[in-house]
Length: 135
Image: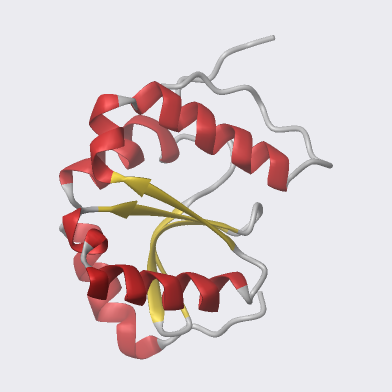
C-alpha cells in the first residue's frame, strides 16, 4: 500500500458506512459484499474516502449522484480521481441511476474490470447478482 490512512477521516468514514445511499446499499448487499475478491466500503485513501475499494485489484468504485454533475462537483472529482490514480489505483465512476436501471450490466462491468486488473490470478465466477456459480 503506497498511501497512508488519514485518521482524521475515520469517524466520517464510519458515519458514511452507517448511512449509505440507496444505490450504495444495492451494490454492496447484492454484489460486492459477497464478491469473490474482497471490497471495502468507505475506504480512506490519504485525504479522500472512496465509496468502495478493492486492494487486490487496486480499484476504487465511485457511485455518482447529482452533485457530481455540477461544475464544482466535476472539478473536485477530476482532482480527486487524479490524486487516487497517481497511487496506481484505477477509479470507476458509475452514475447512481445505472445501479437501478442496469444493475446486471454494472455488475458484469465491475467483474470484468476486477478480472482485468488481476489477470494472473483465478477469480471464481460470479453471477451479475453476486451469487457464486460453478463451472
